[in-house]
Length: 327
Image 1 (tube, rainbow, N blue to C red):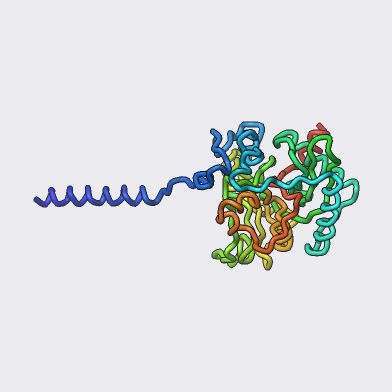
Image 2 (tube, rainbow, N blue to C red):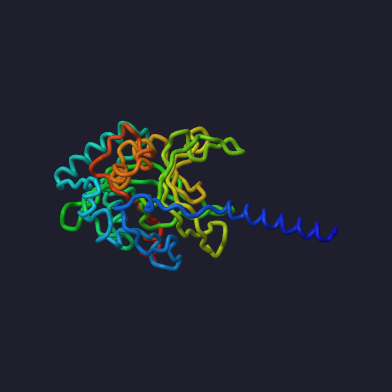
């Protein structure tokens, strides 16, 4: 009898443990499940092959069934804004002036630096990005340890206009030499409706650091990506959730301009607000917000999104280009 009771108890415990395990692993969330007509579901792998010559998966590959397809207008979605080259240059000049006014320590580059930014952006887009379909802004980040800056680059479809750099500011990308710190991957990454970003809660960790900045700061989520483990000599790759966000204004913001993050792209609070307020890479979010309140809840209610809004973060490394030129 005693053995029987013990056996029943063990079986009962196992059943409870199994139920806990099942409940502890939620089913995967896919925005597309609840946005019918917004985006057809393509057969893609969420986490790309680390050995492939790119570091993203995006529905631009399926352009015939994407948001760019005119048939989606029947679902109540506005078309993406498209300016003439003259209108685009005028809007870019307005944003440059606003950048200088609203972001302390904003960097307006020399003509030589501007040409370099444009070159880096074009080369990375040609290697890993889709064709540019409309005039739009790219956020270009140079992870070169000696640079650690971002620049807003105005991109055009081929033959439509001359690419231009607007200006930017300091960032921090992934550090090396510290355990669990990854090297920010290069490539073209997308702020798409495949994921929903969020806003910082402003909470502090055990060291009193607000990792995503003060409450309300925007966090852009670029999904799972392969990145080199900066603490390993062989640079073995692992998966990180690539994000762009603000950082602690009291302790970490002054360290911008050098590698310091665990793999994400850190920006200053005022830069975060500039990108957020002007919807620099929120083109698809603005479109989706007309269909689903989960997207509109992430966006600022008083935002003034630029008609040059895009959806791309382009991470480059100018040090690798210099190394290849010397070899």
